[in-house]
Amino acid sequence: MASCTSVAPLTATSNNVGAKCGTATETRILGLFPFSGDHGINAAAKNGGIKKISHVDVEEFNILYLIYTKTTTKVYGE
Image (cartoon, rainbow, N blue to C red; front, side, top):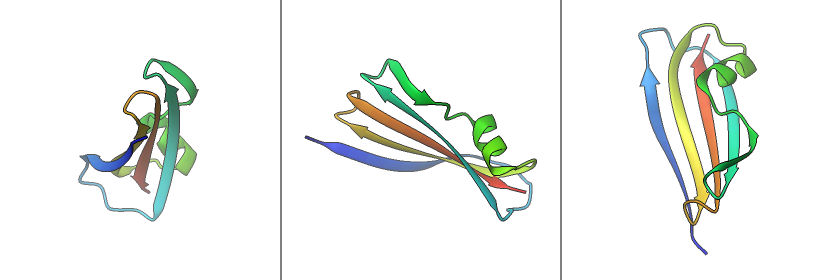
């Protein structure tokens, strides 16, 4: 069995870095079928109570690439 986790910056703005962080997670099975969640930027910002986004990171964990995938979007801001 093989698995991998990677984190990559997705975007940044000129807004100040805030103290808040919001996350949103989605899991997929066989790469096609959403099992649960929404990993969108809007969902993560709403979960963190963020109105002004400073930057966004995306973390992806997978097992054998498509068998199981968990994507987490982290939004930082005020």
